[in-house]
Image (cartoon, rainbow, N blue to C red):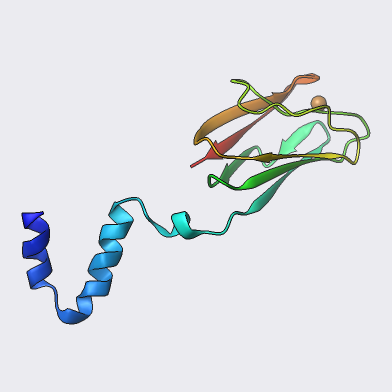
Length: 119
Ligand SMILES: [Cu+2]
């Protein structure tokens, strides 16, 4: 705290807002903490998840949309999420809460793999 006070004394009056922003940011209250939750789509087509790696923020929703003429699913290897069978033209929604990197696959077609990164 002493270091903070001595730093604060050196800051010009106009610099307070910047200093406050730096303190908030370093405390982990960065822009992401105030971001509106977003919805992301993973397209399943031609036996592939696109994008292969999807990065989202906690609280965001991910929709898997199946454009193939046969069913797929999306199952995390640690079972953090596990979709039902997603019918052709169907979709499945998941709200990402837990942070981490989650590799997942289609258990109906085990060569279909991708990752969801919640950070
Ligand atoms: Cu599949």
